[in-house]
Length: 221
Image (cartoon, rainbow, N blue to C red):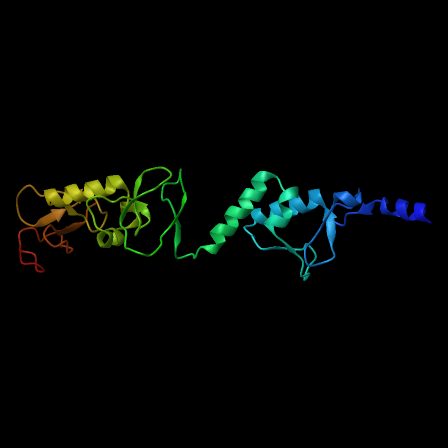
């Protein structure tokens, strides 16, 4: 009888995930439930959940109260999967309003705003480049955040802001139709852009094509 009991303990058990025979020491028991699966299947299961951005990982059986936790699973997980799980859990603890990412696409390091003070110009600790912590973009020198937020998305690059600042210095006017910059050398306020749109150079109001000999009815200049 003792021999039969000893043999029964060595009988293989079928893992219900991969449906393969496994020895008892190849099985991994889920905490808070009675389910057990082979270590390879559990490791793959955890990795797949992390790829789906799921950090609270429960037993594979639907509606089961079983739970998988990093410390309990560390021995069967590849180091990179374990580290990724811990990082994902730490990130999940941060409030969405407190975390953001470096605006430079080749960096994208996760950063956190502790809310203690309003910071505008900041430096990413990873790539060491300057960015605006309020607008979440690369640093917009020469223009404050309020003005920057008013810009069209197509005008927010560094070169666009430099051109905008130059246009303000040179007092260039932007065509209200095609947004092309134009400069008046002399003459009346009537201006006709290369796109064919006519407007007042002083206030930007649309001007009739035959009004260049008259004062602008809007600004009277």
